[in-house]
Length: 468
Image (cartoon, rainbow, N blue to C red; front, side):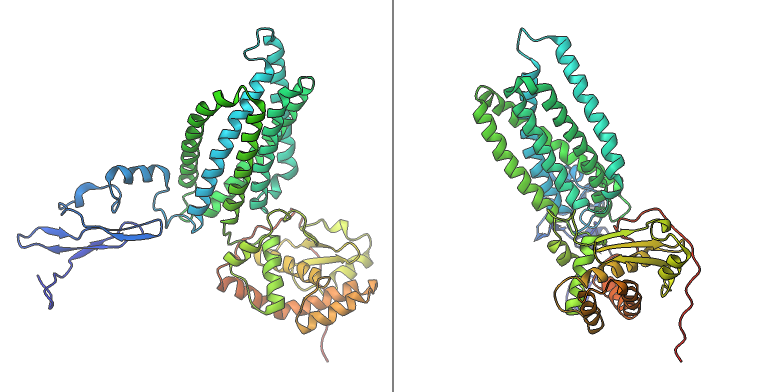
């Protein structure tokens, strides 16, 4: 079967993942003749000439690689369907994450060597019972710290996963530094390694929880288990390489504490840099308070909505824990009212399923959510609070908000609730446009990473004022 230009007409075609498809034509003898595979891997495109394949295509597990061995190695360490089955930022994040894990593995070997030396390994005068007691106290301290930290900050780790991820790795470096310094001051050895292990247990909670949050972000085909398993395989391979290198460097540094400390500082600097690059490579398409503030501020000033890539590049990583505005979503109603008059004042002008209280002096916004409040309502409530916060900021604002900012700067405390009601009217026109803009540039507004309390309330809606 041939076409007009002398080329054979394909009878069928097949495609592996996102790679180029290959066609199949009928040969003269009636057999199927498949085209050679093109290869596209990790963003690089290249076409290879390959030997003719049999009817079954040669039986290759992953087509388009230079060798079957290399193909199978890639399937061991990358999720099935890569790169389509993961987020676009998967590869740069995993590369830098592997680099930081390698540096951390080497630093950990130096710290472990110091701890064992301090406990008395190699010292004939050391007591086994004393070493055992020290180890048990160290582990017990860490276990208690793990429980307390998980209770204290567990619900906040999802909201600022990138910041907590960076915090966990820096804290891990601090813990290893304490372990290296512990043998130098034998009198404080037990206290030092207890503090170090406490820090490491906090690291395990923060690092594990944020890793789970990032896995949810990376998995695009309901393949969280596969992404997590392959991440574990990558980390194991890196740690194995770090172990082998450690076996080579430990005999060199073991007799020279100053050289060991110098190596540790060099590895720590490299570790922090790699962590920063890994976290900065992430492009998360859901809004937390920091990203929502960046996008909203840009929208108010320029009338445009930032896309996820731009907003993530601008998101603060070192100061993301301390926003200028204190925004609390899902607070209990009894915290804001103590009388019928307070309730009437709070409800007046609120037609949306949330109540908002603004304290100008403390720059604090507290939001009571209705039982009917969904993701879009919570997003609007957070936007409302941040708009009030913008009235304390500099920079251009839309006309209605500029007028309100002038009234705020006049310092009329009694106008708090009046301004809250008027911003409701502004948001009635502004928020639908803002929400559509978020969806158009790729933000996932059906879910969010805002910190929301569990309190919900019901109340009688304030009647709308009739315009005569």
